[in-house]
Length: 423
Image: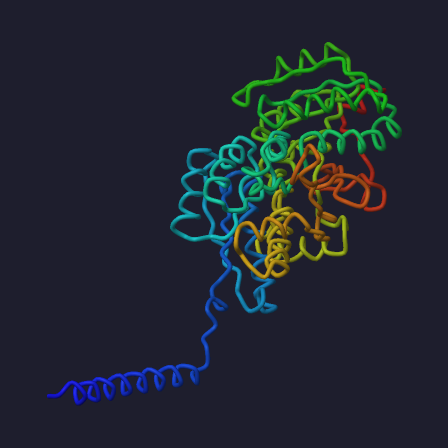
């Protein structure tokens, strides 16, 4: 074959090849493009203490919120999938769950734990794996302070609950209204478990209780493994305070039962995380009668117009009321969904930016986060117009809101032992 004939043959082959390529491209262009990831679910990992009094309602409340959002079409057509893990109240188990959530289950964001030690252990993993994480119930100041100290690394962690400092202020604000002003209490004893979250809480108490007219006459920190509180109550009674201000979460049943059985003639108020759960009445066989505790919401108290409907929906589905952490987890699923919609993405850095501009009114109040220039970076704001929490008291098997006045469903009723001592 001559060179020219050979060239003509090659040219014809090239032409046929080009023609075929163009035809395939044209055909492909005529096929409707498939939405790349529009149908993929948004996966929210929920790591919680599923067997604990406080932690049990976290995954339940998160699932309820997800189901409500999905029933309305999800987030731009994408359904929310809750992937739950039980950390068994162990930081090591929580870390393993977080690693699995990020690497195997491919979650886009994690709601994690009410235990400060657990959240602090997870923070480095949120940074390393670049998975945004929000806590619905851990209080330690160190969580948000760590974000402030090293924002570039720790920006993936959000403190979706009040800091210990804010909780102390909430207890003091409420106690001034219903204990120092109404009941004329003038002295107090602080009784707290030895834990990461109570160190700044107790420091907050030491600062704010005197400002509301309560002189601190005793301060006891006890091991969470304490079995007999009789010596502790004896020491407190010897100091002759008007009331006990608590900081307890990992324990709750034992000190409450012994407070009642021993007929301690002192009102009990403050932080008692287990008392925020509806199961606490049965857990203590009613010994929680008269206990005053700080929470974010309780049944029947309308912190916002969403609070009561959520409580009713939760009770209808799960036959009880959530703990404070359940209220927060419910709100968090909603504002995570809102942040994803605003960001138009589940990519970690874009989601972090969207979460930072959260302005969401949920069942606990209005949620906004402190910015990177404020000490408690990525913690929710505390104060009028934001989330303040409330004080409630166990009365005849029910949690009755007693402060603030605008949402109160009753007044403080002094326990029989306290009344007898006052005569």
